[in-house]
Image (cartoon, rainbow, N blue to C red; front, side, top):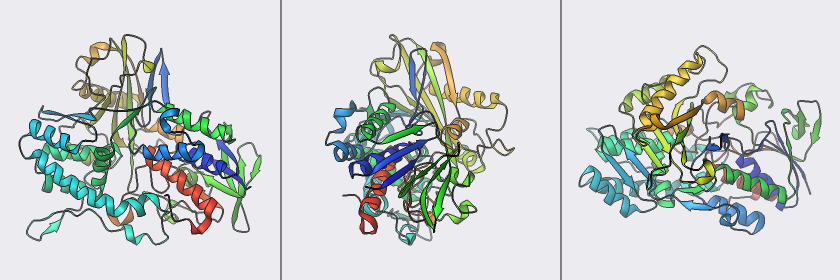
Length: 503
């Protein structure tokens, strides 16, 4: 039985902790915050509750596997999981709208034809076919196996883009795929929104980001009753049931390294904890900033999603009056200036009118009777979290409120009369993310292409005995991907160098 110290109590870290405990190891988790779950948090006030992290779950098979492998219980016995149908409603800048069914390619094709005109659905369906090819080529090595030392395999783009133009050059970015292959600005906006939801700028994201809409429309969108925080609660309870020890409010300030190997951690109060293995679930950028690891700069770390510089603004809206019957759970209200939105993300400044995602869960556990809890989110430049002059969040707090005003106005396309119903709102910016997780950025899932710039940190660190789990490590961010990360780290520790990935 090995002693294992886990830094941080995010979802990937807890997934690793429970699996390692089941394998017979003694696991202790040190978390600097006063709660667990990482970015999967909840804001509560006056009987209203809001998810401030992910609002939906994709690829639920990852967490089904976790609960079966750590207790032989189905996920559905631990949380109430419901399929969201329709999966989403999209409101485009020209006023047209389309409602897309969940996990039905034929239904999506039909809905697009009806809303956007004959042929729109066929073009989207053909695109999804090519996206499926990219998924099939990259799924196993990119999601289910440890990241190899030689990552050149992932430098190229697996998406089989159609060739066009005089030079017959294939599309290199997701935005180019939308323009060339979908040939309708509304379909292109639909495609872009899937990248934005994961923090990627479509203008710079590789064409391989096509796997994101394919993943969602193939495996469906799911919601946990009581909010996604209920999933974090269930994972935490599973850890406790497997005798994982949690020490909250305990900040790790250093990793003890002896003879070139990680042998424990040092806490802020001066205490030390010895370990045979250390699993760091804290964001990799935070570890660099706090000089926990013996590397001088982030440039010495080979894979850390260096191209991803985005975060989220979340506006929690407490509304008087009941939710309209039949309202879509999720509505995407597209920006009227997609080029300006991309330019703002690239330049590190806020745009005038972002694409917003409006979530209206029909869940009585989240609001007082007769009222409604709504969240509105937008992908924004994250800044550095250090209030420097070039940080978009370094200005007066009224700047964030003004941006939230624009988000709220856009959300009225999804919730008519929203501002007249508003009781109060809470605005959360990348500064809140920085305070809670150690980084203002939100990590995205690993993507092939772009020369490997969107690969996260490998699970095995350069220091023997130390591993990385969670959104900043392979295979990246998001609820499903962080769960995969925990499974990979547990496999590497239990099975060693012979481990070839999840089965």
